[in-house]
Amino acid sequence: MTDLPPHWHAYSWTGHERPADSDRNNMASATPPLETAHWLRKSVKPEATWPVPEGAEQAYAWLRAQLEEHPRAAHDLPYEPQMEYAADCLARGADVVWGYYSERGRYISRTLVACPRAGERCPAPPA
Ligand SMILES: [Zn+2]
Image (tube, rainbow, N blue to C red; front, side, top):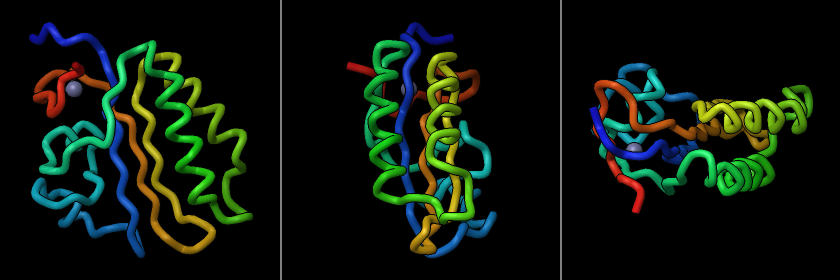
């Protein structure tokens, strides 16, 4: 077990299409892994680390900025429900996992990984 306080790590990846599973399973690749917890095994460093629950506001602001920069296509899930679901996850200290196509046709992966978690090493302990 670990003595680390609970926190989230923020990860993002943007590409032309959803990456192949073989690439996602490659821990040396920066593509989003198939299992959320495996972000912690990837060679890529998290963009940010925020404590639970104090960091929820910053995490929410990060997600909102990401969604505003990369809006979903018009026929896709509207902005409000997506942000409400994120707020609910953050209130519970849970993961937030987004993978969608933007209106410009890019594949957007944005994830907040709750850490610590069993069987995984923390890649960037909170200061
Ligand atoms: Zn961690």
